[in-house]
Amino acid sequence: MSSAEAPPGAPTKGLSLGLVGQRIHYSLSPQIHHAALENVGLTGTYKLIDIDGDQLAEVVEQVRRGELDGVNITTPHKERAFELADQVEASTAVLRAINTLYRNAAGEVVGANTDVSGLTRVIHNVNLATPPHIVCVLGAGGAARAAVMSALEVGAREVRVWNRTPSRARALVNDLIATAEARDAELHAMGSTATAARDANLIIHATSRGTAAHGMAYREVRRWASRCLETAPDGATIVDLVYRPYVTAWVRAAGEQGLFALSGLSMLVHQAADAFERWTGRAPDRNVLLEAAEAELATKAVDPAVTEA
Ligand code: NAP
Image (cartoon, rainbow, N blue to C red; front, side, top):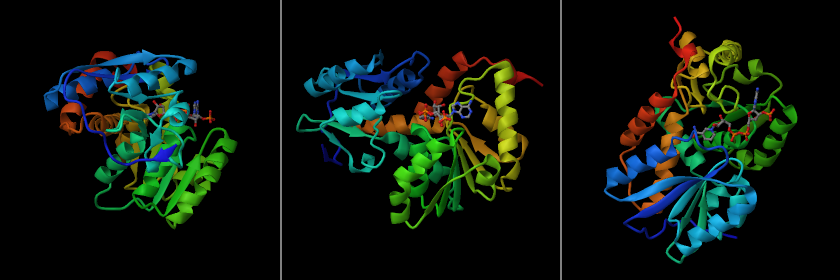
């Protein structure tokens, strides 16, 4: 596998796109990408492709043959897709995981990671005035790894990683420490959320705890988030990668402490737009995509915990 940066020469009509993963029926991506197609004046469909790992090679082959014009890849296929791509963008080499496949002008299947670029854009947008010198990342899965890369990308001087299973946080640090040091940044695994969040300018919640939590579960995550944020300084910004329900437990807890917070919906939209641009060579209006995501979420996220007094 070699590196490639150039976007493809893009087809212009009747695109066949999709999301490849497992248990993806909840996804907002079809609505986001259908809005993107309409916004730039293209036709096509974006379908959900729920498959096992042993079927992934066939999907890659369909992209190679042009039967699919591009796909997003989600859990649990991101690492395997990295291996199956003909080429990968250089920026994916450290993470060895991709979330987007597209075909380049030579007909090769190229892998990209727009989780990193999407989150990087979110952080840029929320931290225009103050660069996030100290970033706390909670979690050590794929999203947390992307979050650490984004934090380094925007110039963090220190990145702290806490995870429920400490050995996974240490493994993450081990894997990414050279990248951090090359950017003159410190990267540490932390033993508690309290020490991880202390003095942090930016806190990124990247665990799957509370994903679409309802009722009691929502309240439990909200209490956990409040405890985690007790040592966060005034002025800290919170980015929750969870985006369901609309007001996530972390966003709610942060707001109760007077901290600015946003959910993962912005990242979802930016990673989608970055993928769409690779497939089509066209730049959709990202506000239109956000509106489509919000509208779809509103139809699905009825949560009594959010509307309680
Ligand atoms: P993953 O690879 O499966 O990692 C899950 C992480 O959550 C691990 O660190 C795990 O800790 C932690 N975790 C799970 N249950 C927990 C609990 N009860 N308490 C504390 N920690 C817990 O998942 P992922 O792909 O990184 O995704 C993480 C979250 O990010 C998901 O909610 C996903 O939807 C979201 N995400 C959002 C976007 C977006 O565009 N907004 C993109 C990607 C992912 P252990 O190691 O201890 O198991």
